[in-house]
Image (cartoon, rainbow, N blue to C red; front, top):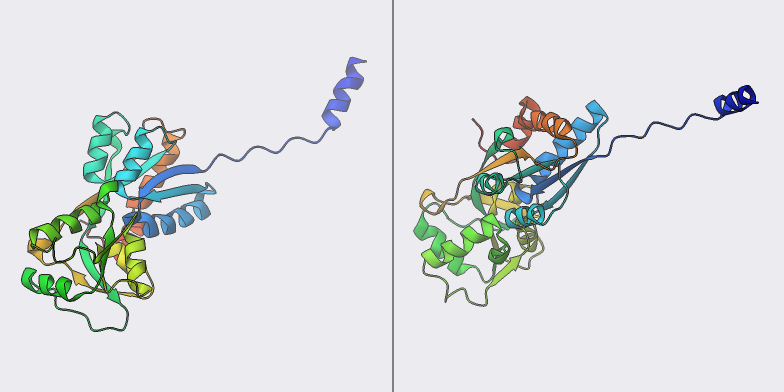
Length: 251
């Protein structure tokens, strides 16, 4: 009887081995396009899926603090440092992806204003009927800088009612491409990624913000080794070439 039962069990089809769950990555919009491309290549090479969720820097940090599952976090160096201090990412795992500049976007095909000096940038902003940038209240890196720049240039009153704010820089640049704004202040990687928008150039040095972006393993990572392998891809030669093409400075 036992032998018959064993033979019957052996005759049953073997269950398929479960595929590992995709690596969970939380990242900012500044690195999204580059990270997505590298993730596709990583999956093709290793067979390991990657699920990338993006938001602005402040929202990414908040979601991790509120307990969202993540294996790897891609955020500004300042946010990664704060998350490491809070015990949410492994400080020793942090690796720089590249450094991003802020720039100006206008609709493709229109004349590009002079923004070579702070005075020229001020004049260009004043001449724009509507400008767009990401939302200061949510902790967006470029939006925070844009709002402070408007204050620094003494334009807060002049621009009242002429500013559109969005949850992320990509949406702000999209408003330019769609004709809803004449100019957007955002990070260069987000401007390059939006068809219909043209990069005028980086902000002048006296108005510039250089933001290093860093990848780190989350302390609650379900697959820390997989997260390290993905980081190696992001910071390896192929990853560096992709980030450089998106406007990041490396080295």
